[in-house]
Image (spheres, rainbow, N blue to C red):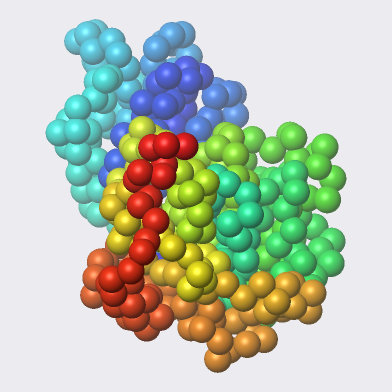
Length: 408
């Protein structure tokens, strides 16, 4: 499990929130727990979450912010309070220090200045014996095009992990991960969100459906209307809680890049981008990667999985990789009957057909995640994927992907 410095942002300004999110997301040592907009609730929320640091943005109503900083310093001495503002006047910096802030971050912050603040925060935590949170690794299995089978991949990947794993259905309007496991859940993510202030191990166990000793599922709500009240901050907070209790948290988000999905992707250590080898899906995958670049996600965070491959497909994987600018880390063969049967049985394919090629490929991805090698290249092209690349090197008529997409 990773050790990370956990952060909470306190700001009512969406632009400032986005700026601070980007800074935190750019450093692999850091994890954003949530953003708090209500100053009256901030102290109670931080007392419950116990982050390593809190960044308090001072853009307006400075007196109220300084009162909060002073209260946080008195009640949470182990949490580093960082004042951030676009006003870097000596008067404001002095007032923030007198209020009890340990650091001042001038906005917009450059990488060097932010790194200095983070290094000092880490030094404070080490000097005061404040251990960084032990957090499980979070993997989002995502496709922005329906029909690519990302729920199948997410369910089977979760079942293939050999350590305590939580699987979360974040398709809040139409999630059906419960069908993959044959469970009839009594609770959903709504119950966890509504009771997040008192979550403990027993309550978490009650809300999650246990598939095995090592895998628990947090289903999507059946009442889709109630799901409309769930916010991105709620999702980030639930993920933070689960990361403290499970070695792996696997997320199956909705195809649309709404605020809920973005919160999941922001908090993910790895994004497994699922695509099929058809022109429409590949174009959608390319658009996703372009969006991830604009969001500031490092390229090593995103890896492509090809699903439902068959030998009748005329696309070479090397063409796909060149077009996407990303290496394909796995390719899952197409077996429609086996996949449908596994759903009808309510058991993942990796359990019902342990010797199948699909199972072998999904387990290989699970082993790469466990070894922290999801971002490696050719040395991991083994088994079915490696043999497929070798076969694709043979001459023959192939579809020109770039030419086809340029015509479309």
